[in-house]
Length: 595
Image (tube, rainbow, N blue to C red; front, side, top):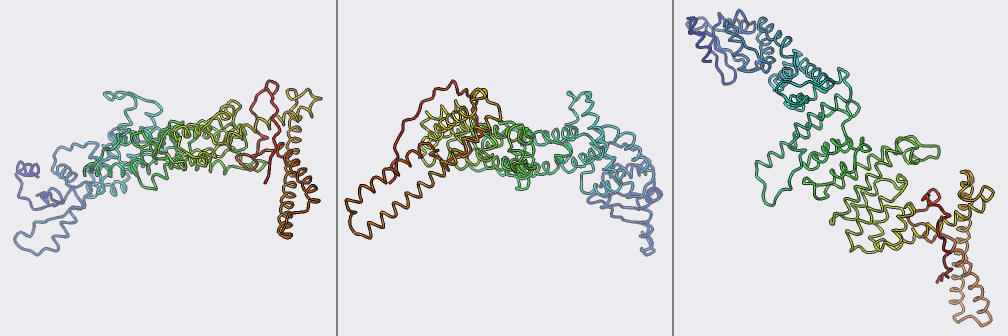
């Protein structure tokens, strides 16, 4: 206002007869200067003159232009231009001046602003970012969208990002070739989304979109993604709480602006860090779930350290987010199981190693989960349910070997020595002892921390393999024994062994049914007679009972005593050990008493 007053005094014109108000700013102007160059002011002055009565001072007009895009700053530049002053346009105010010129219906001023945008501001990445950033204010954005200024600026930024991502250049005074990332960090998340949209419209490659998203997020959320120290006791300062709220809102906005996986697949390590930050900052449930789905989509590309970082607290010292890890793994497994079924009816991802890309990915994730579970097992305060939830999130069939899982179980049992037998069995329920390698089974058979059920199952497996090997060798002698059998011969031998076990199982079921009937008959006879049976019946009954128990004992000695326990399918497991080099010790025959 002072500068305009100086212009008026220097030109020795009549006192101001046009007053323009914009919010708290007042501009005393002259109709003779402003009316010829601004169509909006001309129409407003004509309307005011028609409605004002004739008389002294009737020529003065007062206008309220608070709705002018760009506000008082943009109008001051426009008034300076109308009064013939020098017009200095910069990238940060070019959009506001262009929108103000369109509002005032000032064609000459609009042409000057448009030429500056096209020939200077939008020709460089920093200039385009400055123009796009100036359009973020609520007062200017609608007009900038209507005049297409915001879209053109976003397209100019997208073009600059593509050029710098594909052909990096070192900007003078900017240091490393990645200087353009700092330019993007000046944009708000909503404005950055416009840039990503422009990149997709330009059909930029997924690697360019991902590079821009990662670079922007790393800089904007630098304070959130960095490891934070554990908060101390006591009340938190109000300013700290307010800062946390602002950071949480910023994080949620950035996550919402990230590109879909189809447009720009983001790195798994980056997504894991962002998920950990969202959970630690207590972001909204929508934001956390969105990040969980993103991490689950690339979980097979992550490492154990990435996934473990999600489980830890903000200081990276204690396990706090185990439920988040469990949901991520469960979501990944669910997606894998929705794949097309194999001929046997099993999901392709569970059909075995190498059967499909999904199977390889699931095996990799299973090994990663086992490593994470082993690290989590060292947490003394970790409940059994939490450990079992994470370790058991991957199906047992997804692991060709349970050695890594056995290591996690053993670490948990060692860290929690006060567990009783039932609790230890619950911990061990996530693994199948029959899927351990020979070395792991040997270790398990001597591990006093394991429950008895697990130890006996591991020992029984070796006996079962020896039985299967003997059966295969007898049936395949013509081919030269177990070592020289063909694949078809091994399959036939295994089928005969399975058939033999099935027949013995049926015989045992029949024997047990006969025993129950016999015991029931004896109890009814005892109750009915009210006295002990005669001596003539005792020897026969005793002989019958002895014969029956002997049959049951022989049958039990040939069958799996853990039928219905941890694992039933042992035919598909091979430990790879040379059977001829194994020292076979026949177990002693023991009698089983059933009472």
